[in-house]
Amino acid sequence: MREQLVRFVESERERFLFFCGEGFLWESLPVGTRVIYGPPPMEPIADLEAAIEQAVENPINADPLSAQLRRGMKVTIVFDDLSLPLPPMQQPDIRQRVIEHILRKCGEKGIDDVHLIAAIGLHRRMTPDELRHQVGDRIFKAFYPLRLYNHDAEDPRGLFFLGKTEQGEEVWLNRRVAESDLVIYVNINLTPMDGGHKSLVTGVTNYATLRHHHNAHMLLTSFYMDPPRSSFHRVLQRQGRLIEQHIRHFQIETVVNSNTFPPIFALLQRPENSWEWWEAMWFHLFRFGGAVAPFELNWRIWHSIKAPYGIIGIYAGEVESVHEQTLKKLAEQQEVTIKGQSDIVICGAPYLGPYNVNSVMNPILVYCLTTGYLFHLMSIGKPLLREGGVLIFTHPLYERFHEQHHPSYVDFWHTVLPQTRDPREMAKFEPAFAYNERYIHLYRRDYAYHGVHPFYMWYWGSLGHSYAGKVIFVKGNRKVAERLGVETASSVREAIEIAKSFLGKSDPSISYFHLPPIFTCRVE
Image 1 (cartoon, helix red, strand yellow):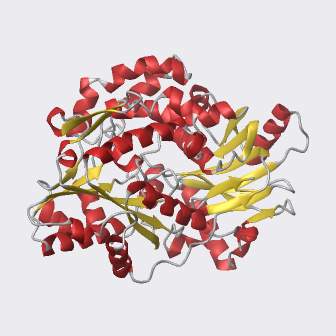
Image 2 (tube, helix red, strand yellow):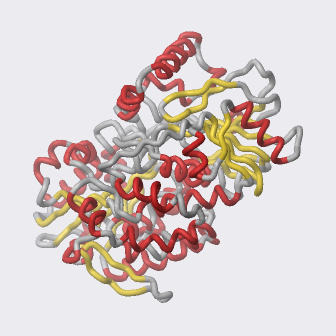
Image 3 (cartoon, one colour):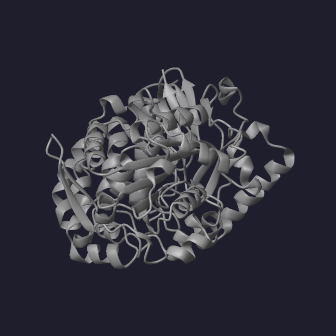
């Protein structure tokens, strides 16, 4: 029952787990603290093949896929990159299952001009092994590298200018996509921030297209979880609709449940008071072991985990109609209705976000994950935190960077942040990073995120940071915290005392947004 997902701390002897990077904290909370847990996993679809067939042959506001396929046509299958889901999915990935289904239908129609493109946008290229994990051995061997590859947002010959929206926003598109007879997008949805027009508009376009919504002004004035009033969404919609005028597009969206961890770690996604004694013992053994183990060992253990997600929804057809159904299914799985905002909101920050899969969570990514993405997840309807309240996160804020994946982040950290933390002011540095030839080369030929990417992360994080009156990181490195413009505390209790002093309240309202799994709060 959903009402059982919200409980109030009754005794200071109770302890709760908090993700803290690659480790955990085990701490008490004040009596009366509201603890909000994510919903348990919904029952997955039993017969995936039948469900995929049902979706593509009975699409929403579109002709059946088989009716759209004909011999001699040029088909391009575009799919979400490794930024989703989190953690990565156990094989076979749902994208593999859907793509195999599409390829069989193409084969039955005698279509042999088929390309598969990873929609990386300005993310780093996926390695051959990462591509293989998503699409499976058979597809990888048959298509890689000539017909299975990453989108290149900096290839002048590989991009096609579609035009401008009625508001003057440029739209560029991957040339192969633009020139195809049919484009099929295969999406995987983990949060309401995924899918819809965003799939093509951010996945197979370029900086000139993205800069119209991924900018300081837009991301500081738009709550992502409020699409009707979000200027960010309106730009995405205008650009997406322009793309729809130029290509035949068939959208396939899939929804995963909240089964985040394999059995050995499954207890993490259940309330602490539901654990068996042996589960509690295992957790504390692992917690103590992680506390004394070197970072590299903890990192390898966590990044080796693949999630046993179940598929709870598959929808196909016209993009906006499909996404509407996807969001409804996501809400069934993820939404917890909460009455009233809080003065203080606490959340554990895990080891993983969209941009450090098989990589390192550097300070800028921590900032984006916490005051950006996690803040948005707890802000459907209106923010869980009242404006001017205090956000408390648990993360060590180590100063570690993956030199290959995040070279422009290193330079952003050392050259931009020491000068300003104001997103509007730092926007003047953005072109120098976006058009930097070294970053472009590393993006195209190595495995680096695009030069402009750290700016986007900072813009995302700045909305939550500016909305809150204070942001505190428990166990955070003070030097790193100072550069980020946040404070630190040695424990959750100390952070709460700092928050009380700041708010001038001896008995503030407190909510703990308890991860994992990923979920959302609808605040009434």
